[in-house]
Length: 233
Image 1: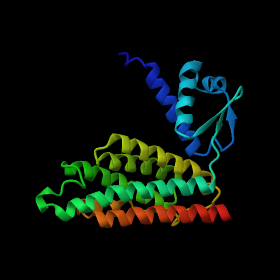
Image 2 (image 1 turned 90 degrees about the vertical axis):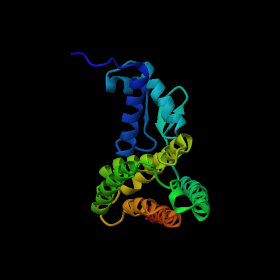
Image 3 (image 1 turned 90 degrees about the horizontal axis):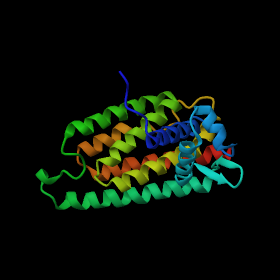
Image 4 (image 1 turned 30 degrees about the vertical axis):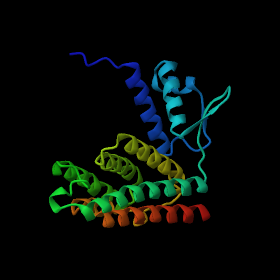
């Protein structure tokens, strides 16, 4: 039985996802250059979907276009990372300040702004949080990145604004791309990675925006301090 045909758009996305994973895994390193032809030969596909995928990743800030030469993995600076964390804090402040104001003026039965009406959805996010926490505690960076990205994407989607969720997902991918080279220079990451994913979900399930905001603030502060320390080393 034949499966569904792979369209150019899905192939384009598959290649973009694969290359993004290569960057996050550290197999494509900052400053590394490559051509459309090299990637097309690597994946055994035509040049068109590869070029489209590389343009997409450039728009997301992971690659730079090099005139007449191809593409280069973007090299982030410490100031870039600080700017990303500042952006994450500003968005979180806006989201949870608004939610806190609503909670203060709503009756208990109306407190549905912090979580989906289907509690099963939030429980599913919590299972992702548990996996991310275990990976972080154990220092398993590859596993953590996968679960962390999925966790935050699903969590951000709960607030009902797909544009905001997409922006935050791209920002988090960029944060990982910036931090990964520093983190991979460490022999042992056990106990050094943020592991508060379940605390955040629990705060949301309690309809407590102040506690949720505090967890996110601690997350951002933890990652910024760690990246700054590793950069100094």
